[in-house]
Length: 277
Image 1 (cartoon, rainbow, N blue to C red):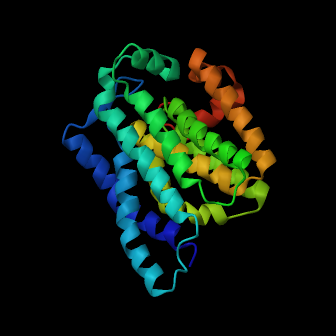
Image 2: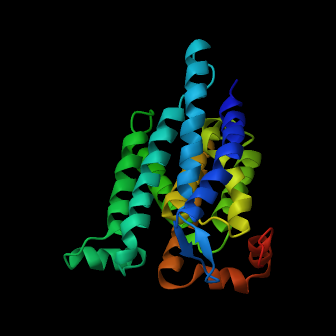
């Protein structure tokens, strides 16, 4: 029964996500992408909608089958992913008015007395991570390490989402690598409610029919961060945090897209499946 969240959400998403993306475009919810094409935005709401619709039958089955559907950490995942997606939605709706970019830009805007949705998103993500990771039997160091890893992963995937399919493909690589390395499918079943819709959204993102927005990239980053915490040992989490920190700092001062374009292997992986590679 542990595989049901993934399978049910996959089926629900196949019915809901394409229709939701089409509805966004038809009603004028679009934004120009990097090629100046008008794309449905923010498609992350379709991911959230499919996950919540799938939750209804899954919760009923879980109750009737004595709690055999959801893993113990499913509630934690639901709270954090939905929470950061809502913070991202706020950024998508009103953040375009603020010129600040990156953590440094948002910090400057906040210190200058302005309203920065990016700063709110950073503080809100930290608050949510501190909340959902408490009470898991971790010592202080492990708790702070897990919190930092989840928050920075959420932010990094937001930084990555500058080309079609990039964040979603990165999630697949992280999930596959961690699952194979740890030989543990527990995170896959725990996060399955969101992974199914993410997989359905991937081809729409690659074909430039949908743009995740901060709503979607926050959710994808949250899934990746929780996957790392649920699957990795403390030492492995520390290594992952160091790598993510390096990538985040680099992204604050330089362009991650330019780095990917200059690196043949990364450029090849980044272009796979893209309509205009």
